[in-house]
Image (spheres, rainbow, N blue to C red):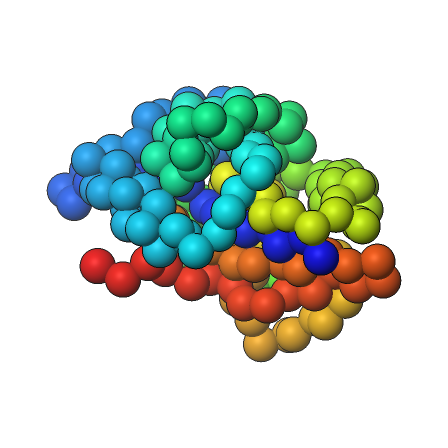
Length: 197
């Protein structure tokens, strides 16, 4: 069985910063609190023996992954792990995004992965990419790390064999879940867990 840990990168903003909607076109590094989160993730994930690690091309996912894996593990980039493009709302202050769309639209995205008008997201392609990735892991016995962003991670829940409507789609910063892939199942073990402070 393959155990796949899917992490969201750490914070890109610190307390007091103006938080913006950071997507595929905004390549921010981890903030100081994000670097601390990545260290806590590394400690919390020390039980895993990662043989493979993947991240998006974005620096925030790369920095998070590097903090977690051992130096001898090669970190590979997978394009499908790149965050979605928030279109007209890309890198805009979150308060402005909520004012433009309304909280109901933000809630639809967070709860049901229904993207508002003006965002560039193709759920079917993302879901298919997850399916292809998981299928390629069948028959192996290894631990794999994937570091991505919230907009991509949420679609994992559309692929698993044991769906749970009560789970939050949104993966908080520096939170993770485990997917176990066997010959006939893609099973979610847990979701949105954070390392203790």
